[in-house]
Length: 527
Image (tube, rainbow, N blue to C red; front, side, top):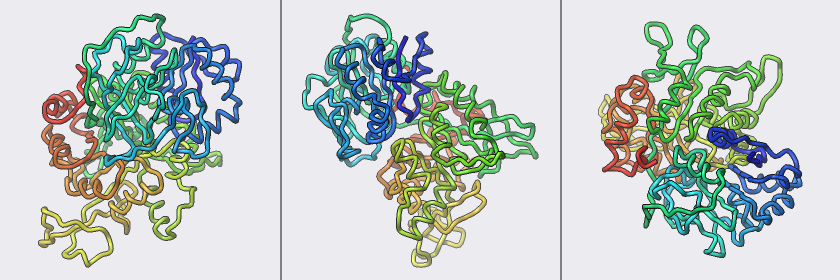
């Protein structure tokens, strides 16, 4: 029996699914006695340090958790479960941690995008049985803005390079904690969990020792999910956002099955974009909840869900906040949520007043779950102008001359599936959303969608230069060379594709094999 401490934030379903996939039974802590009687304790955490410690204190778990840790029984902390072991965190000044490890948690102060999101390696500093059976050159999934700084180097288990060499794992007696998420790290992560769960004390050395790790570029498989005319949920794909062909919704497969296929092929992340409105459904009955629950049972890479993350009222008159909707998605298996059209409206309100309200969906979700959990999906279209003085928007000089010889353009934000343009440009939207607490940008381009002509590199570079958070390039991929182009001609951390994968025109292994000797990539043979 494995005891899991679920303090109510983030996606713990994936941890439970991963443990159960190894044949173990999970008991979720419901009181102090469960902590004190646990034989093996797993403490996963995603979100905000202050919120986590407040909940632990409110539930009177702090002293019991300290007693368990001091008993030296097996403990595995994941992400925020690592941070909790330390004395304090810059994320929540004045809030005390558990203090089992002397030191603190600091925010990244580097010239790279923060949060640190994606697949990176580990430098193993001392033997540990949790790495038995691994070579040492595997990649693991990270998603965080803060890193631990222990006072005592003897507790350091692993380090990772991202602008600096930071501590990515600690071990003190039977206390082990990692910054990376084993439950989201594919087969390598499952092996780490298996080593923790199974009895034994033998420590085998890994065969590869890395001097410096590198963050991989991510390949993201996107599944646009909607209800067809028969009421079935299907994966579809539009051409410039039009998903119908000969009057019917294009049906490119079933979402759960396709997600598992892409995971097995080596996708670094899976994104579901719910493009059907279920506005009057009771929250627990929204069909995408089931899609996430079933997908997360067999897909051990990060899952993002977009569509419908907003305040709404169901057909019984019950009102739900965007935070409640996001919480239910996280509890169903999502690691990140994506906000689209509503982000435009939120940014417009912010522009009008110049003040944060603290009540927008971006701010609320970021406050509870952390910036890394909030992705902003931007749907812009190119608008040509003859001179930057014509408009007040952020304009770029373009190499793709307009129909009337224009040498400048701006990128107009749209809502309602691209049907309605707004008086806001994509660069400004990205900047405002970063200020409001978003941790990543999913950058689409209506002009490129479904064209197979390559990503809009000018748009991507413009947005990358405007923000300090990671950017996912989207729209336009038609061949393996387009992925190489976007990773070498822009600083985008990830590239997303949909139609070419669904139609089997290009496969994920083909993309990764092409990139393998050109761009840092996570390969299945190494994971």
